[in-house]
Image (cartoon, rainbow, N blue to C red):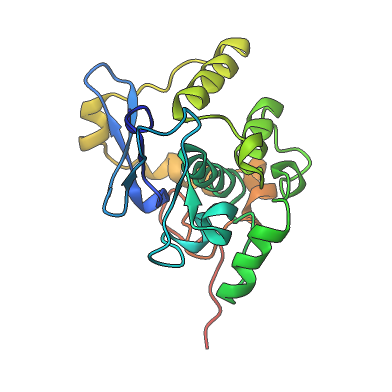
Length: 220
């Protein structure tokens, strides 16, 4: 567990997360690319922080925490902010903060609270309030309001799973690597009206199960 070893990734984003099936049919998430990771000074207090004054900041702007932008200061909770952005994006198909102007984007992060996930979801989203609350907590502008480290987040997720009696996701490893396409099922999912509230949130590059674009691109 990198956080327990004092290792801070500093660039958690979807491109650095690998979903891998295990032999017991459970799913594991593996974090890749520790190229800009740093090790906190073990001689400091348990609430360890590190300030890197060599460069203004490192990381991917949309996933960077406010303290990473404003003070080049980070600890385990800096990674958790990025996890919150990934969750927000995964559940709403948009970033909590987005701006084509890099400076404006970074200023938004340091000057404003992230919007609650509930404010960008369709009214009939059906998402558990506990999941929304966890996402909002991870995106708190103040480090002190976020969970302490990844192990604490894991316990919170386990509590949500136990409280709502949710089953673990299981995938047949052979089907995962050798699955065949089912055109009839894909076509039915393409036309499923229950997905309509979410389609307006999807990005143009997302596809239907059959491979068709969700949002048709206009010809020029």
